[in-house]
Image: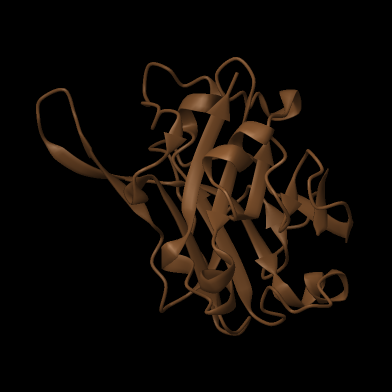
Length: 210
């Protein structure tokens, strides 16, 4: 099981493991968007929040069983603007399992030919929080905090989703003003078989809050 710790940095972290910032994607992968409807009933596409990209070579020393790929990049996106306090401009996907449109896990088998996909506001400023560098270390399979692999930290999630692996666990952090309702945690979940088969399209996203 792999603990994630993040650190503010001035580096652009192009092609590196990073939390927040802008994803570096190959041309074969589009930036995922969620279909929305505005107050006038018009449909539009809203970009999902980029959570992190994991350079798989970085986690290989902490994954001796080879549960995850050891080359390429793994990307996580989710519809979490609401939980940064944007109550007036964003809706919450709710508790429990989220519909597929509200999250996405993507994988690029190579770290070559990447392009930074920058999402900008009308005034030219970047959408989202500044990128933070990531360091990895080993941890217990049911620890709290930011983590790859293992069991969900919360008993309630393990009971509701038995046998599922927490591919990525996202915990609250006051530094980012990220709060899942009163107190909660977001888990990207995958079955052991789907993980073995690298079926990233089978990942589920589950939000629990007390």
